[in-house]
Image (cartoon, rainbow, N blue to C red; front, side, top):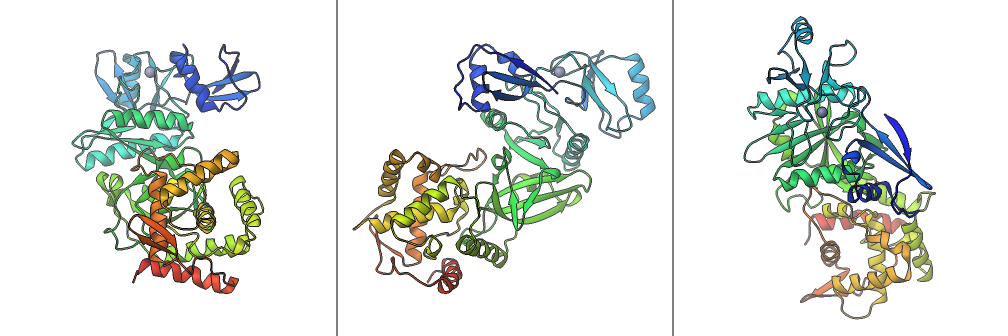
Length: 465
Ligand SMILES: [Zn+2]
């Protein structure tokens, strides 16, 4: 990968992020050029464009020969000697851009085809690790064993995209095995491209991307956007089970692992249940529409530990949203740590918000306290919009996470879900379509009682009277 610094004739404000610069470039006449760029860094006054076409950045397992036949390097098709003979007598071309490619038969990396160092392919490529090539080959062979007639590196000219493995059929699926980091805008563009053609993009992350943070799973950059949604337990059987999950594949161990039953604890931290299946024991449909067992006690333990930490040992680094809520609490003469137990409730759909549930729910609590009489989710959204006009940090309070592979949820739906939880807990009463705070809404408890109450609230939500 090398960088080239250019001065572009486009207007660029200081706050412009690389994603929007990319859009800006595409809007102008850099369309062909941008396809070859794998990263853009914005500096004051100039943009560095990182080109991803040096050797090793573009690794293919398929090529076209000069007699028009396609050749695949997936074992056991050819032996080393056969490939060496072919290399001496034939020429190989990229199936996408038709430029000559080199057959590499080294010992360190899996055998592959690569473009010449000075020629980029028409499609976007990013650095491919040996793990990526092995993983792609594993997925192809595995899907074939289960009778799905997979297509390796099938090129879609309309989309200018080439998924690692494509499964045709009633429910066409594109497996994208993603080991390297890609810009969020690239992820969205590829995902929406597949969806526009009725293809389900199933992003499988490389196992080296799996990060843990204490009891939490950490998802950063484009990773949260790979979250998928599958009904994982009979509706209502386990109120805290979650249909949201992320899939990983480890090409060394030949194991799929899932971060299942995801609940957001913060912008990048998630409570998850880890489930693994060896490649031998799982079928393609089980990756796309899996079912996972749910362990309620493990979940409650993790959720309550997090809540206790938020009450008693808040993080030293206080983000903008937490600062905003702390300021509000101070103005209302409320102790930040003593928020009621019905603040900080879990629900699978709260993953659509980037803010930790206890912070946005505390804001809802403050607003309900300040209201006299009936209110609705609409009232709260109206208050929020007013709040945003007064304070520019307030917009972050309800910033939605981008989950292109999950059913949409509106802010109104999420607030309505929370208000209904408050009704179940008796903190709020509902009559017709309107809500009203109950007599116990403003009760204050000492901290040891609150910690016990946190658990009782979860249990009551689990087994409503
Ligand atoms: Zn090419």
